[in-house]
Image (cartoon, rainbow, N blue to C red; front, side, top):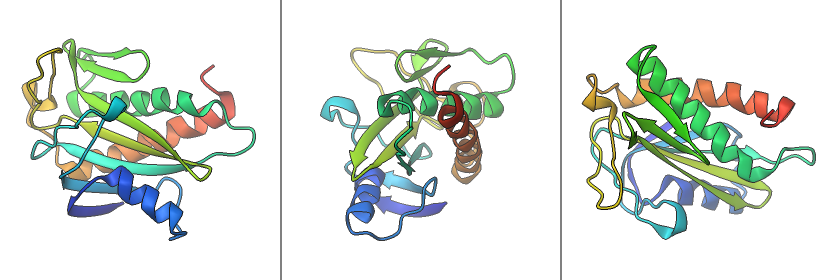
Length: 175
């Protein structure tokens, strides 16, 4: 895991490294304490609250890989697993297709997939310390329930769960 204090976008940085042939290793994470140009699906801006998790990793696509779009659900499962570990069993977490993780009915995370030269950059943001106020949807943060986890600890936990879920996805698809 590489942790930087600030960047424009972890997804953009990973994509640029792939295009430049900089040897970005699959499942290597780039995590930022602050993003100045984070974005979500359909070009939406991604809130970058201090103390929240913002990170990206790269997945190489093989010829027999399941449909690339299904990787967003794999990421959502990993976020749910990491959030459950932080919050404890019995936490009010739910998944909403295709990739929303909800805490007490509020959106806890955002996931953005981008295809770059036979790779997928998986960008994930998780509201650890604070959630944005959005006019059209309820949001939530882990800090609404417990003290927020340390970013590095959450990142390591998420990377572990993502690697496990990625292995399952490659072996079984979403089945």
